[in-house]
Image (cartoon, rainbow, N blue to C red; front, side, top):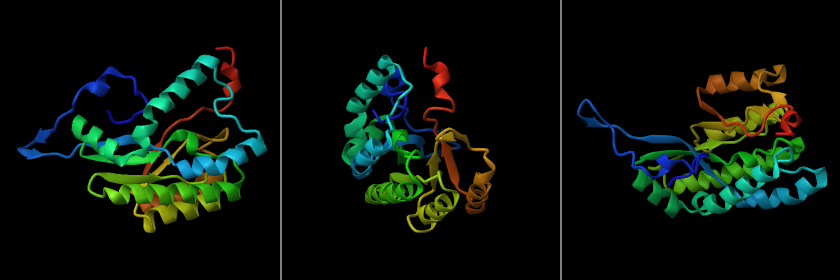
Length: 212
């Protein structure tokens, strides 16, 4: 199985095969595939404690346990390139667009910290996809908590690391993506003509569902 958020879905075990159109074989691309950056996780442990950040702080105990167990199950698949390629072959997937796992956005961190951890993640991702360039392409991450830093890292992702686009959350620590301050970021993304994969992880005002 290759990793996707609905990891438990029955369809994961069903080979997709190749799609043939007009007598020619098409390439099958899976755009929703994640990787964990161990170096970034280690880097941010102390920072999370310092600022009092807790993942899934508004989740129920059941939600937290499901997420913990899912991470245990999928962690090897996110880290091992051999397992990833084997799963791709099993599923009939030619190319994966690999992005960071959503819990590693780190928008809650101070801007300078966010910039450094984004660079760490992107460098790690570039090394991983560079090891299998015929099978993997990268979707980078940017520190959206600071517009100028986000634009700079976006340009580095595309122009230096060779990524095809980026992955972002549907909100920035509670701030909507339609915020006026992000207009220059969107303009740069449009100028570069890249893929922007919006993968939600939480939402604004999550306390509204605390009792559910």
